[in-house]
Image (cartoon, rainbow, N blue to C red):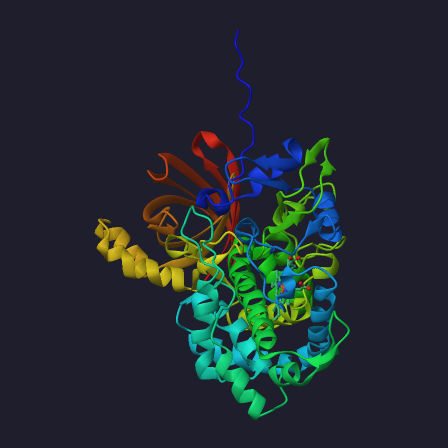
Length: 518
Ligand code: HEM
């Protein structure tokens, strides 16, 4: 009898299908290849929490001097002075020190009211629309506005600058990021720097221009215009797309966990903890890279000097060796903190600001939109190897899904009876726990004695249903042809405005059904 050995685990940081759900591969990497070698793209990767943390903390072996993005390390370019995320001490300590002096907690806290005012202004007009894109309508706007507030950039110019910053990180699907010496010269802040130099104000740009410090040669001086430009680009690059992704993941993950979302609506005091859990569960920066400066032993093998090392933050954050039920999202989670802001000398300088933005954004979102269903047909995961998240994450708000179903129903080949059912009757928002995760659906039914007719709407589109009624019990079936032919059988009990029950997925087992009348 011949047996086939399971295929060795393979991780490709550029394949879009891996990024769609990297976690099963990360789990295998942690178990089967804690030191992973990718020959094709010539890098090593560590995936267990302990290894990722140790690499962050060992700045002498794992250097930032060639960048912290794989493609930049491979391109081996000159890094301009002041780009301190890509410097080692002593230059890093000096430059980070300058920014730390002006990037104070007081300044962050002062921003909170202005961030909230922006959220109100952005979200209020969307109330009642029935539909809303977490990223395009909100997440892509807010972080750049905040950096603009911090730096004193006029509102009308903030969007153009954000587009340039984002474009520098965007990749073609399936391919590495294209880098060149010009890549980090970045967005056009020059005119603001020159203008601010002549018109000082109470903003961070002014402080950067005026602060005196002792540089790595011992000389006392101010930052050069070029260094200020690099600092500002670094802030815009590091603080913009990362925070946008956090807001996108908020829409996706809370959409997948409506019970926990409802808890946050009821008890907003849980929101700060939810921000930490979102950052752990779906970190906007899933991998950080380093240049290896000396031969180093890891898991019984030698990583040679001159290699590129990827630290898989997103894998470390779910490592069961550190996090109990690491693969489970839990807004109540206590215990060790995540590693999404890095560790060691380069630990994120904007973490306090990112946390304020996340907390205020979720608070203002939930006040207006306590429930939603993500429209995955029209969602788009962004194509970048550095930050992972959604470019578009549209969602149906409140009865928006039912409204969309009504709008779509007459165009389907549905029999007249069920088209009628789609327009009146009872509307329900349902959540199914399936073997592959949670599915959100809406149903609209019209009762007729011991039977009912209606429609169910979700990722599979709008489907007709007919079912039976016995007292407060409903049962019905739904036959799907895509992504495979499968019959779903539902048995539910209605109590007031709540529905609960079971669903069977043909031969694939069962799951739980819960729902509420809308
Ligand atoms: C959710 C949002 C954010 C995430 C997940 C994040 C993540 C990170 C990570 C992992 C690092 C370490 C990189 C390395 O070790 O090579 C880092 C560094 C940095 N971040 Fe953030 N960041 C976020 C938001 C921000 C914001 C809002 C700002 C400022 C406006 C910011 C500014 C910086 C800076 C300046 C560094 C470089 C620190 C150094 O090299 O000493 N970040 N960030």
